Image (cartoon, rainbow, N blue to C red; front, side, top):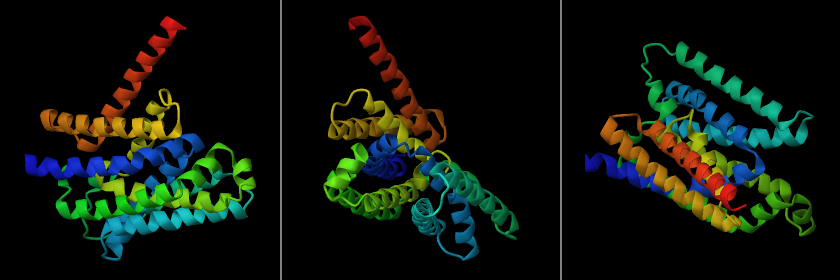
Length: 266
């Protein structure tokens, strides 16, 4: 059992290091729908990977990057709002994925593992690839941290400081796309956005600075992963959804504690 759980545990801890800080920006910028769009397009990536006989997860990474670039271009060069564009792309890709999978003949596809993750199937090879991706994303995030933070807090002041706002938006979307693609095997396509949103939303009520919010979100994310793995082992539940349930439980618990504290003393 330890041999199965240990790679999954390390993978979850590694992913927490990037999902938490990126989740902070997703919550601040109200980009949850952007994450949902990329995650819903994963099914189309799986179908394309099977059709072209390449690793489906590589196809998912390529597709999410293409979609992120396309959304940045469409947002800048069309008159449609970002919500409209995200809705069109999300449902179109999801529908294309379902139709493409249905057209594949003599191919059995375990959609459940792609939609809800297959955490316990992660091996050390997956861990190495995910680790490399985490290092690249984390290094990029640290390098652009000040500029990303400035454009998030006040785009006008950031522009006065000489920061390229469009470039920072593009960098953030690419990092989010890569994070979603890397985390796909962990919790699956349908609930990957929860790894970004719930820990960051939980930490927001207690943090006083952006850096402290990232630290709190990382700790909450790690606790959720540990709790989800324990729940999966003892009650034989799906590992990915179990992690999300633990994360949501921590959100509700800390929300009740926070509200009780303020109602008592203020």
